[in-house]
Image 1 (cartoon, one colour):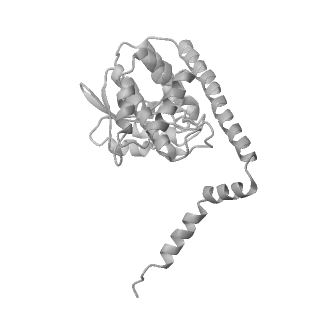
Image 2: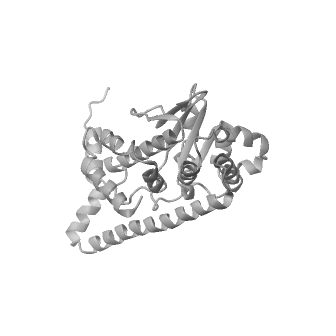
Image 3: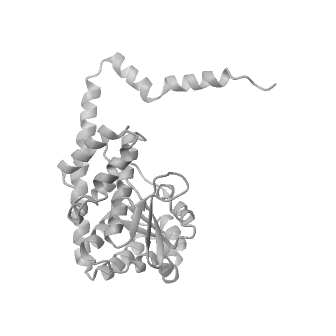
Length: 289
């Protein structure tokens, strides 16, 4: 995703995020994109723009965009895929192909986000959501996965939930001619037998195996995959500057505020007035005596 294209998407999301058909508009614009354009934008889709407020309609729509991009990617890889419209007890993307089905979840994180824990990756939820479905997949930015010891790896291995990065997905899209992806979906079962208890907790061990499986599917080399990862690192640094500039501008904006404006903003940020209203509502209730 070049910066002009990313900026265009961000501006579009700001424009349509409150529309009742915002998701349909995003899906229509991105579910039919060319493979070339998909290869250009897929890695960066995992980086949530800092300009979107936390838990805002814009943030949620970007997350939906990541679902559309994941479904489109899986379609190019030969799996008939769709984004699940309803939220709740289901995965974001459902795919099927002769012989099996797949439930998937796409993750986006801000570069300013602090350390993540296993709950952020929802591995257990994916395992629950598969129901009669055969396999499960979680896709997130590679740099957001824990580097070494983490409970997400034994969880993924034990429950046979495949962890992939957007970089691996991009590599598969660029190298494979709809080759069988079953070795990826069965990675957990295989590693459950191969790894020791210690190895199951190590990200380094897990990703070495995933790298090898992806390269085998693509008929490519680890060196070429490494180059793809280096390209992601450079793009991430570039997008990091986007976030830094945004927050530096925020600092400058705050420095220009008057004292009264700063106080009003602090009150709003802390949601103090809403908290007072909630307390007043609670103490004014009619109690059963």
